[in-house]
Image (tube, rainbow, N blue to C red; front, side):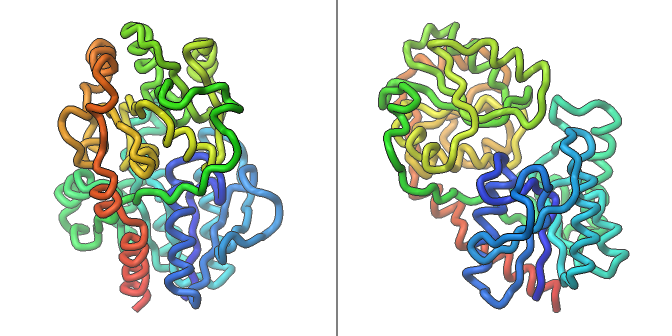
Length: 362
């Protein structure tokens, strides 16, 4: 069986929730079924030139502009054509923007799996026309894909109700708790941080991540801990520039960090905060959970899907409520790591995904 994967920027070590999802999943799939050939058709600007392998998974760059508006659709178009030329049995498309190409993949005779990572049309960066295209991508995924994987249980039920004819083809398979690599070196010393004396947030510098609310709440609470924001911007934007201008001694922008450094940062943080307005099933929160980091999250449905106690959540966009929550002891936000590991286990997720591939391959 030959599986082609497209829609993502690339692997390994490429910033983004979809990219982390694919890196965790595809390597495990290859270990489970060494006879299955897996090829990622990645966006050329994000990966080294030329085909290469990562833990048995082939990564092949395809032509793509580095453009917020066009890179996903152009790269996925090229990825689908490349999948056909490579003789793929199944093409697995990630995210609803790239899912606009699901009908093309079907027309070329490919079996199609789409993973719906979240309602991207709710992202603040998109204008009216882009949002309509993303909604169309969701509809086409529901109507054209042989199977639609959805990472959030609440979104799964929502889509089954909205598309009853596709209900049996819509499957809930969540993100998992990532396996972060061992800590190496003195990551905290390099960044000038003291264990237990900082709050961490992680995500791209885009409005829907709500990092501006966290900076405001941190100042309002007069929190003595350093606020460390890990992540960068895919593309230059006014929002990212304005956010970065608020950095200083008490608010540190650490930029993109490798996964071993992220492990160290989560492990020694006083608190992880996710103030997002939009998520799929939040991988950054699952990464924090893997390190037993206390967690405080906005009360959007994908965050609630993690199943933490009600005190772990604050009303999204409510800076005053977030400031009050920051004033409570970090120990109040401790998590049951083993329970989350059991509910969001990548090995079981990989087994279910492999079974789904075999199901539609006949």
